[in-house]
Amino acid sequence: MAGSAAIDERGDELLALYDRALPQVYGYLVARCGDEALAEDLTAEAFLAAVDGIKRNAIPNLTIAWLVGVARHKLVDHWRRREREDRKLALVQAETPDAEEVSWDERLDAARAHDVLESMGEHHRCALTLRYLDGLSVPEVAELMGRTVHATEALLVRARSAFRRTYEANEGGSDDA
Image (cartoon, rainbow, N blue to C red):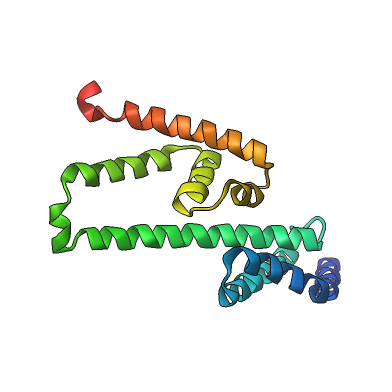
């Protein structure tokens, strides 16, 4: 019963915070995605994550800043899902009869680039995806990753270098084996 009382208390804490947090969480999201309906959906997801965290007793300090951080992660997750969907649509479009005009080398290079990106560490993959696939500016990437702009620029330099090394190392394919 003590656990249930603690959950109820944290739930009351979230309800008390809700009115103050809602405009800030929604404002954070709508400013970054520019789509009011999407911002509403992601705001709801962020608050649902807070409720879930309360039920699991996994929230050390329930604050507006914590909720905005959850919202940031929900937005990044949305962009990742959208990018995966866009890649799938591009593959479907590439399989149309008009795609026969595209050489196999171009298709294989795109596939290899995708494989290289997937093989990279999470920070490098996230930074490169947000910057070059999602088209975000370096300050936007920095904010989403919770880093300074300078640290993000350095991360992008290292990530591009690692990508280039791996891509060029795989250029020979199985001939090197």
